[in-house]
Length: 313
Image (tube, rainbow, N blue to C red; front, side, top):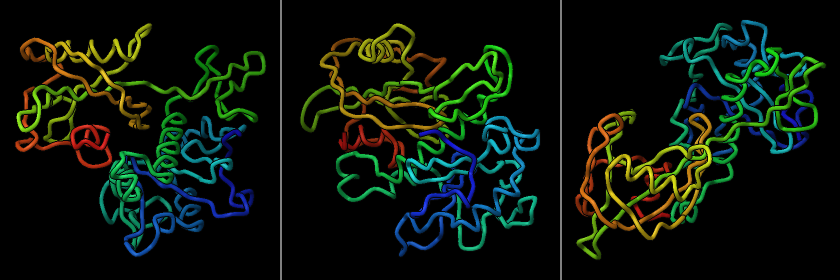
């Protein structure tokens, strides 16, 4: 089923989930007693904020929101039962700020929370224990990823014409009839590896502090799969490049969509084989072996690294 321009009149008869994002944050009601689906925006709030949206693409007349390219910062996915809206970060960065239409941001009774926290908090106890994604978290990842697609892929890479939603596929089609190029969503596979050595109380984890981490914590070695490379070969290469360590007994343990902006994280564990740590200085600030009872700060729940380090995968 294709994505379509958001229209309340054309929304499915059943309940429609409405996601509102600001960058990598999601808007939720501040009422912990309500089920998570009831803590998202209602139809009236979604429509008000959508009408006042002034993202660059909207000001320029749109690029990919529908067949007439009218509103690229929002869309509706009727097959999966949700709609999504991306607010312009520049107009709503501070609490108490207002959208162009006068709407308070965040609206009374609502708050913006990190999307990765939403992934964790929407899980059932069983999903948390088993490192599984929640249905609502998966839908939010899908919605956020597609919004990123709309903001980036605005013109046909072949002829330069504007892109629009295809009427049959979940894809973008060139609006030039003479071209008609069809582009499906781009997903970037990336591996993340927890390397261990020793056993029992003497077991140690290889953790790294990446220069790109926004917070002061240690995580697992990770990196993107290169052209022509298997995911297993990528895992071995990334550990070797970043730390100088050789690994063995590589084991796939799980995956998670990571729409920041478009990754699919493939998680592995591996055993230490040989070598001493030689840090890749262009990538890492630090790397070391840590016992489980003496761990440094690690990524928050909701991330693949958290699942690996805490043994949920």
